[in-house]
Amino acid sequence: MQFNERLLSLIEENRTSKNKVLSDLGLNHNSINDWVNKNQTPSGETVLKIAVYFNVSTDYLLGNTNDKSPPNINASAAVIDEAIGVAKRWSALPEERKKMILDYMTLVENQRDK
Image 1: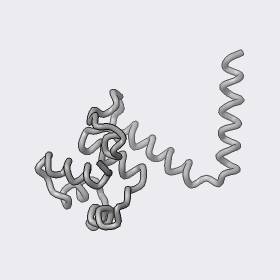
Image 2 (image 1 turned 180 degrees about the vertical axis):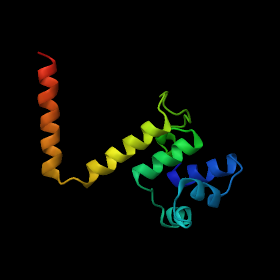
Image 3 (image 1 turned 120 degrees about the vertical axis):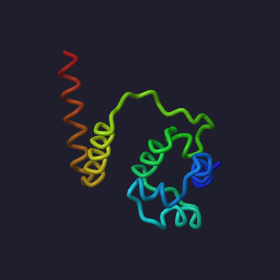
Image 4 (image 1 turned 90 degrees about the vertical axis):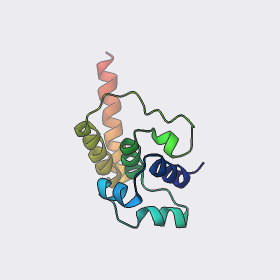
């Protein structure tokens, strides 16, 4: 099953509407129809929001597994929002800055091991 089929199925199973889901998640009111009609998958951030909303794993939502169980994490909404914020900042960085950060992380990890 593809993302679009899983999403529509979850909406039906949860007896909600496309508009309610989009409104609750702060997404454009045409998003679901655009994804379905164009057979597209939204950004990773949006997939994560939808997975959290329906309490399923992103792998399930993307069709990589039939197991709906979300990962067993004890993360608050604030932690999830922080992780999304970091991901946004990371994706906006130029490649050379990303490399600098990864090099620094390697340096710190190697110092920790000594």
